[in-house]
Amino acid sequence: MKPDQSATERDDSDFWNYCRTMEVPDTLREKIEIFQANGQVFREEDELFTETSWAAVMMGQRIPMKGHNPMADTFDPGEIRQEVDEMEKSIRYLVQQMPLHGQYVQKYCPAGTL
Image (cartoon, rainbow, N blue to C red; front, top):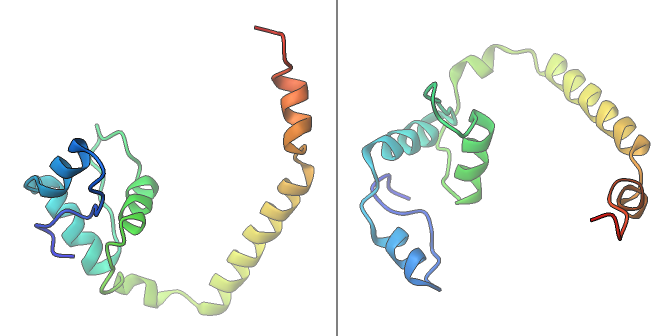
């Protein structure tokens, strides 16, 4: 995708047709260019979206990264693997502690409590 093109391919309503054909604002074009160059996202202080949200939007719209931040090459691959493994263990533990969906709904959203 070129930064001056819309990422959306939807054409099922007037809204999406407008979004698909409108001129991309300069501020968004700049975000797209930086993301494509090295996967980075910069956030202004008053922006609603966090960096993580912007990255999810860019990847969700299939905006490709053509490179990465060279600083990433300075990290030790073994340390990165260990950190990711620890995150996975933590996530697995937390998921095991969570109630099933039905249990959660029954406890926090029982029918007839409106």
